[in-house]
Image (tube, rainbow, N blue to C red; front, side, top):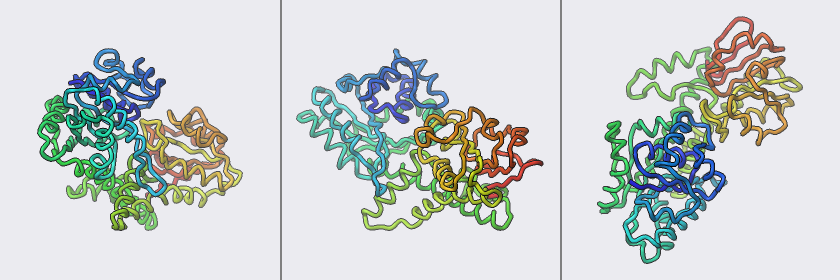
Length: 431
């Protein structure tokens, strides 16, 4: 099939490359000429394992990029993969996706064949039908009756996004009631993936599909906060939270995933999506107390890491190493990274911060241009009075003799990636 993907950010680039890998002809559309030029060279603007290889395989063949929305008229299905950032109250800002929807409608005003517009962005229930569809239809004018709408939430984890798309746990396809053509068309888009993987397909309404994404992320975020809360209690009793979690995870009603207690969740999805569903619930007159509590637990975790450090060393005037700046390994994304409040807390207490991350240092430098950035973990630890481990990059597990070069070998681990060893004062956040 011929597909167009509007928006070439993290999600848009990944799904465009993956759709091409499934055999579709894909046109990526973005208003940023530099992004388009980069894609047409086969270069991704983000760090994501496996993505560069897919681009190299398909750019110039089944995948091209352009700034021209009129390219939509040569495709059968358009996916909207635009950002929906948070407003101050946590609700989503739909201005970017609505501007794109209008541009899509203007392009479709010149198309006679039927066309399916699918929301890929994360939007609160009702947004596709009450905001996005009207924007497209108004711009399309007389052709609007030949446009169908759908919703296909993404479940991509940064660092494993390509694998998540090509080997999904589930595929959720939301369409309008009674629109058999829309159902068949969206089915056809994912037919190669279903045939290849046997993944379960959930066919549902558009509002239900929109809510499934929020429910999925809210559940996982709450599960992490719950194990972190339990881990904090374990720490107070001198109990190893990981041994507790290993046993709890054997219960098939609970499962072992997302039971690694630590410094909390970050990134672009969990914080934004949980805030959005809280705001949406409040707009409907319901107070989501459990989700609010989950956010509260998460917000407190970085402070607990710093508190453990200060129980051994006063940060004022001291050189403190921060290992890991990305919100998780295998990405350069620092959005809502737990390193941010942690670094700010150290600076507020007068510490001299030296930070290291294998790929995310340049991004963090935009937030904190005046702290020191080391080119290796060893350099960050050299002559440091304390070290905080924030991201569980695999290379940190191999650190050993590097701790001997610290002025004061105090290591506070927020991810259980460092081995306890003689010669260092080691504190685990929840163990």
